[in-house]
Image (tube, rainbow, N blue to C red; front, top):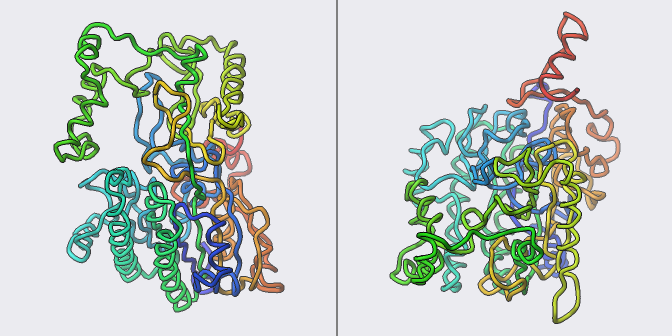
Length: 529
């Protein structure tokens, strides 16, 4: 690790779901003075996300500098060989993160960090932390301090719970931001940090349900104050401030039920309503009916399910008919299915225990499925509504990656449900993810008014490390955004160095025993064949 006294500090302020289009327009109009100051005195520009542009893929890419086929996360949950879901955790992130390399670190609310791993510093986990769970802080006693000092602290907020009362969401969002600011205070005072990395998820939560620009602008003014506070903290610590979002956002008007398309084209078969399922169906007792009944008596259905044993939920879901992708598809008679954030898996015999597609037929099935998605058009406009990407092109280094990725074009959002309609109005959802987020940098050696050239989420970690005087991981997919540096400044003059890091962020040093031993260690880390 570089000499502490000669290395810069880094403060990464993550703001989930902020689109460049809104920041660009509102800074130009003078509505966001702190964002505008960052643009004027530092670097600013769009930041391209992962494909698909979604939280569980993008935040690990920001933190590690590698695409999903290296860090290993393709969704909040992964699909098992039995067509069930397993929750992805911090243990599934296969690459070293910024806080593994750059310490001491103060890390707060970054998605996909539960359970908290031991680091040099303090860590509070983010999205996908179970309600009331142990293990959401490092060190463990930090949880007691949070409970005592921030009694209203919560990891996140489920926007869907406000569908019937959207007017209450902005207030809940404001409370979420206030508590996150208190967490930031606590973390930065608890450790003599070299890296601060804290994520605010509030704009994503708000925008999914409300895309009214007057409401959004009020919220973005709150975020602007958060940015101003971060600027003061960064300046006091002589740190470089980075403001980044994992993806952008934009309005939607229709939902496209992608598994319904597969069913219609003969690639997917629903489970028969026989036995108990048939009887319950005849009685009108479906998953949707149960949920409606529970919520009708004032109970939070999602919270209820989270607190029930998984085995009980699985038994009930399997017996109740409905349109759930996990429980209502007959995989033994289906060639493909969409899971997670648009991940398409061909049901091949090598990957799944109940697979029906032989390996030599996978490419043909992929081609048929891709064609089925690409040919779907809106009956009112005649325009195609879906984009399809080949998993081999997106994720060439991981044989277990999704076969295809399907996304809705602007204005359309894909949905996995087995609904009867192919396209339906997006009732209860106002906006969805877009590919273009934001990147801003401000501090020592960042050139005023500079603009990153075609920056993507994997460029963040290499840039942070180089400016902090650390080697960039040899495995990084991103690059150092050197166009942001002041001419003749130390980071501009210094060549980009590389090191091989293990998963814990430790440098793998060449041994005295010769290159053969080094090659063996690199091979064990997966960097050479």
